[in-house]
Length: 205
Image (cartoon, rainbow, N blue to C red):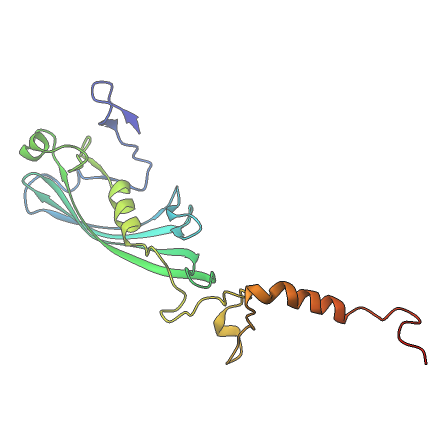
């Protein structure tokens, strides 16, 4: 994608080779016309929070969309779905979660009242009758990802003493806790218990 030298914020053209870019010329501009779009597109950059949960680069996003011609532009609605992977926030086990988000976005025609009265970061624009779905889908998917993914809703997490998953431990599992004021004395006692008495020690008759 290249940038417009007059307005750097607005791309001069969109790359037709990108699977995220849709040419709307077949749709036409008469209000009421519609066209279905179903396609699988790859994620170029991971979506989400690394080491928490994300849709990995190279993963597929399934798009099931309806493009509708309206007075002010092209209205895109439908769903985007993908598989996210991460780690359970409580026990750190791997987590796989199917994500499906609803998409509703108006892409404004150049010169329309919507374009004249809104900023581009509020309402995206058509560029040479083409729309770029990637920013819209990316934002919707990232917002749908859980902040604290769980392997199970009732995951009990890890034992804070030994770090083993509670689900893998025997019932009644626990650790003896010693008052820190006595800890040094206990350590000293353990050391002495392991020492052998010196040869010839002890009283003689």
